[in-house]
Image (cartoon, rainbow, N blue to C red; front, side):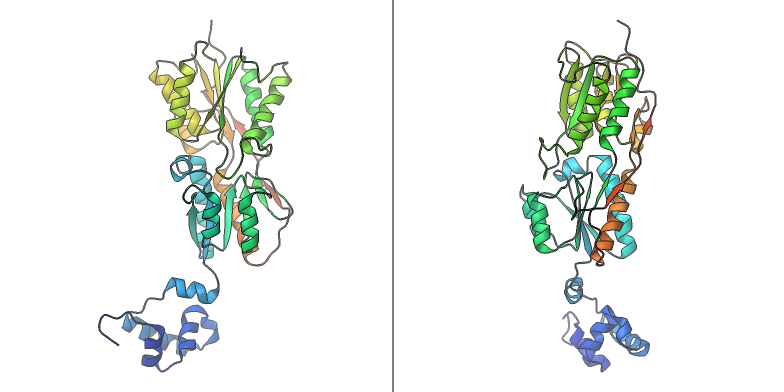
Length: 350
């Protein structure tokens, strides 16, 4: 072998006396050769300093040995949301168990379609995906299995969800039961591959839950005299920005209802920056029950939805599909519950 040249399967075959096919089996399908032959081949490979090329191995197996997670926004927004981080952790744990890597797929050159088209993965998980989207057509054309979290289940797409409308109803009901009538609602932006007007999107489902709670008390969510509505990205910085806007309103609401804990925590920080006390001057509630919601002071009233479990459940379903099982219209529902803490109190005295 030439000095400095990277050793190849051919070099190992010549040195060991076995065929290139047997050498390939030693690394990729050891059950197809004897234990003695494999031991001799691996000894020669180790002596030569051979490291298998993962691209070549994956090509021989006709697999990428990687699962893709489609980030719902650009990286800075997606990974700035602890909820997404916990989903990724759950997916990653299952990938590790199956011997796969996890590939994070952000929009490519501003296009999520282009990112999906070029993704070197054996299966894909996305937040808020549903049949009819361009990315789903591409995945079908590529014959890549997929699962959605917080999306719309169909005959072709298993989904992991909570009952978002009911969870939002319970959250707003707790706020109204506490006596609040002047409320700021901070909604979420749609996923990069979704649509703000999509009636099946998570923000729209939660708005319907809020509307139900208002209607039971003869209140209108679109009444500008009492209800202010804002939209925010799911990051602490954007939460602070919307909190400052709320604090600057001539009519300060008595409670802020957000759809994300990290946005709620940003609002609390902005209010404290302006000298407002939570909950004496203004109450704040969130959605997710991530770790930060328990650490922030005052601790956050929120909806608990186990993001890590969502990610793990979606990944396990995806691996069943990768292994040839047809799941079809499987809706995997995760239980939620309202967590009452100190950030919600009655409205401030006039």
